[in-house]
Image (cartoon, rainbow, N blue to C red; front, side, top):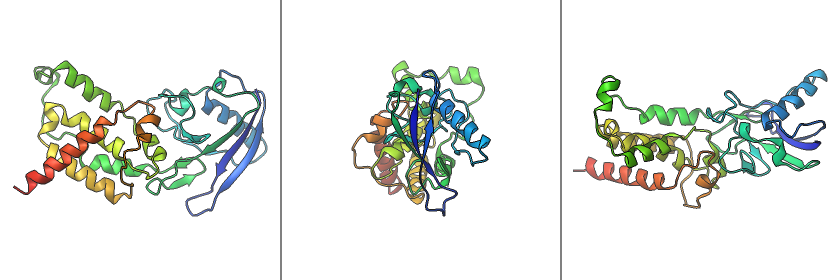
Length: 249
């Protein structure tokens, strides 16, 4: 297969950046998208050119690092997959593919397709954890939790923090990510002790990082590779409002 690649190249956060076009031939349909970029980078290195910088780690759809815009969609054209799970058979031979980094003030570009998502880490540090002593595994298993609640908490916990929700949102809102991290803890007994404090701190940190507001377009959930549901945002709003009201009593 042969492709024309239009890739965003940017030396650092201060550089203006621009698209650069590459022609790539001999691509196997069974290659993953990242493997295709690996092939391009091998050719660039052979020519003593700077390879395209991008984030990757597990390449199994787990870590969420393979964040890039592909033909105007976060992670590419397929639903519920990350970039590393996207294969070249999803594209037409001879197609032009446009590849960009996440575009958000809170995600400054490090180089080329790599962005700094440290804002997500700081939101988690603000309250996305349980600090109570829950005991050992047998103790935790003795706490009765309805299966429907456990399943919903697990669904929220599948968020990998890739940032596709922010990239897809016209306001660069992080509401889906933050609400998923709040939900996975607030629905379980171990997380209820700090629920009010958690909601207020994480929302405050989200605002401080410069993420935009939510206007309920649903683009975040539609483009999420793990299918995180919009109901998490409603739950976060309830948690936050309840915490604010409670703090005034």
